[in-house]
Length: 250
Image (tube, rainbow, N blue to C red):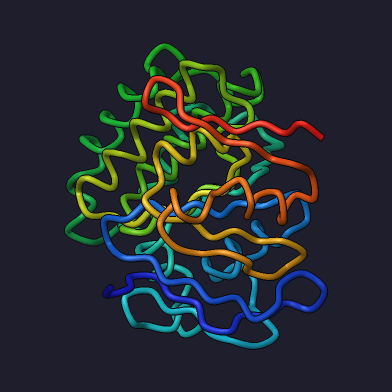
């Protein structure tokens, strides 16, 4: 497998220990594990927002540590768990920020088309002139998702992007992930809804206490035995209507 994103022996004191990960173009990869297992830390390291104490990260073979902020933003887009805004920027302004890495390049000619696409895909047209500070939590989540999708980076990193979304919003984000995979982009997603992750992910990394304890195809990695070990409670899994379901009976 030719890796678009690769981390080798990445460690962050007290949070992550010698983690390896390889994700190819056109692949959706899930980072799974209990709270405090190192998922968000690993995602931040992959994004270049957190410098590891040891190890290395490359995107398309280039060390992210050597990329400037603009080049990094052109190669990867990160939606963090929290994106606080203290000022009343409009929805349109926030989504437009996603195009800033391409200002002054040939890609800027696509700004209006790209913004129009993400606005339509996430049902935001009626909110464009609203201040983001006036929106509900779910609406703000959709706006920030549209912003990072408008960035059109070939690597998309999502940290619990579905946490505030209702069922319609979850369906929209799952559809967006599939669209990005279908055009050959790489998507790495952190989440807790194991059923939805298993449905959308091609591969997975299972973490516990800062260590990788399982990795590979999603079906082979997210097993009842492995999840029981990671979460410390009995986990069962079965299939219903063609989808895997997971539950704890501890």
